[in-house]
Image 1 (cartoon, rainbow, N blue to C red):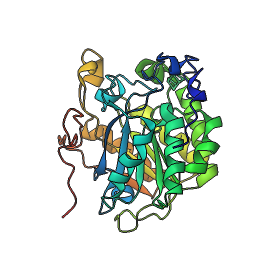
Image 2: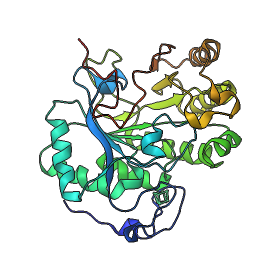
Image 3: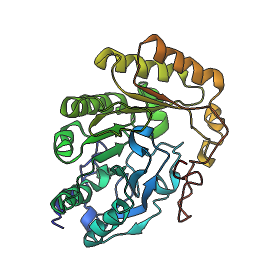
Length: 312
Ligand code: SF4
């Protein structure tokens, strides 16, 4: 695999702009050196039907994260950096093992801080004749200037848009610039790839390219969610594909942090869904609001997601 490590030397791969030499073993906010680490790889059936389809989405969960939201639902990999090191030459075999399970796509989960590795892997797999769509599944906190290069290799962007409220972003992830940076990155993604296509929420025709935006509704933060929707609507109109998620669960780090220590109420989620309808968004995934935690991962298990089963 043809891997160029130079971007890790004074790492500015994400808006944290740490400037550390990861090739010398230093770590920035993402908590990762230049040695690629992966927490889990395998078919995943808990993504939206456009990605999971009937045969699953081929997820590769990269360890570490540059966002560091204190409420992160994947804290074992984002905050505790669990995972195993992979020498570059082992990455294609790992991806091919996942692809051999007939998944619909290869889903790079939080790959931005390992972009040189992810990019080299994409190139290598295409050289080997892999044709499934490549999916860039990210926090939204991306360098806008990097998006065109990412779009050359990835077919689908699946960014979060977490915060429209700068003060909330500062409180949750220490980055008051999240709303503006994530929005600028999202605009580049849509310019590069357009909206998700084809749109088939039944999952019979899985997505081939384009952008779908995810938003996780947070407890006590309905106004933030409404502002997110308004901002997305103003820029992109009601055709923008959305996934409005209710699956927030309080993590141990949420204790003592006010409303973050509880779940999202039905009333809160419904207020957000009502605004989705009022704004005329129609390509929308919504979730049942249940106490279900089947897709709350435990990356210490070989299969981290207890509910991860192929649909009958
Ligand atoms: S990728 Fe990591 S080290 Fe590089 S700028 Fe972002 S947080 Fe800092």
